[in-house]
Amino acid sequence: MLLLTLRSCVTHSRVQALRFIHTAESQQTGALWKHGIQKRWKSTTISDMVTPSRAAVGSVPNAVANRAIGRWLLLCSGMVGGAVLLGGVTRLTESGLSMVDWHLIKEMKPPTNEQEWVAEFEKYQQFPEFKVLNQDMTLKEFKFIWLMEYSHRMWGRAVGLAYILPTIYFWRKGWFNRALKGRVLFLCGFVCFQGLLGWYMVKSGLEEKPDSYDVPRVSQYRLAAHLGSALVLYCASLWTGLSLLFPRQKLPETRQLLKLRMFTHWTTGLVFLTALSGAFVAGLDAGLVYNSFPKMADRWIPDDLLAFSPTFKNIFENPTTVQFNHRILGTTSVAAITGLYFYSRNIPLPRRTRLAVNGLLAMAYLQVTLGISTLLLYVPTSLAATHQSGSLALLSMAIWVMNELRRFPK
Image (tube, rainbow, N blue to C red; front, side, top):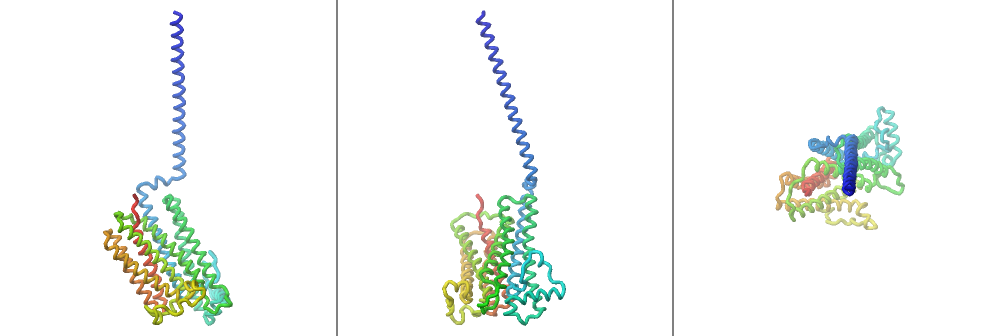
């Protein structure tokens, strides 16, 4: 009897202990679940407060955002193209050295009366271009070249605002993903760098050079750097805008397509290099050296091709060599584009891609025609400016073809 009583007590105690442990575990688990839910709710709420645009960048606004950003970047690339063309006209009219100082805000106000114009003209008279080249210049003639350079600088500031202000707007709306944030920050920083590089280029033409008997002009190296950076900014904006507006083409990844894609990349690089070599032609007035085609003064290879010493200086400083190189690059570019066109005929391409390739070929032959005409007619300003516009159009067509052939994501 005593044993039965003890066994009953032990069994009851074990049951009570198990119930207590189970209750404690349930309470602890419930507390953990409650803590986790509260933490999750708080983090979600904070996330929504910090990035309220996540819901706004959902399935519907994504397409709207891409279209808006794409059109904005195409507009920016167009404005950069306008700055390049305006800069070319400024160079052709020899207006680039008329403004002899640089202020971000102060110079935005042009002279408004005769006294201010005279003061500006007197500043210009203290620098080499007036002393060597324009001693008989009148105030009216000075006003023309000054307003040309002023227009170029103001357009450059408008380009900067066209990049920076919409970037702030789109960023606040949360329409940039991580990749686009990096790209637009690069573009905004690069457009500011481009403005500083422009003034660095102009300064080279304002320096006194007692040992030089040449016409005062900006350094062809700085001119090429200024043009090259503008072309990089233009191409980056154009590529990104096209990528956002035009979906990738679903092309079969065949060996022929891979070769065509590689061929297009190399051809685009060649077109870019040809356009860049034009900066050395402009900087040295090399277009006025030999005005015959296809030969140069009845010779395929002119006698003074390697007149400078050391030899490598001829590539960048000898006007004859600079013009010769530009001819070779231009001819090679047209040959490469022609080969690209005929190679693409053997590959089934979508209609839009085929249109881009055909446009590239047509633009190449138009551009080489403009170049030869500019040379034979002794570089008239209107035709030379059209030729420079053609180089930008040809580069745009090459970027379009390359963009059409980009890989489709797996």
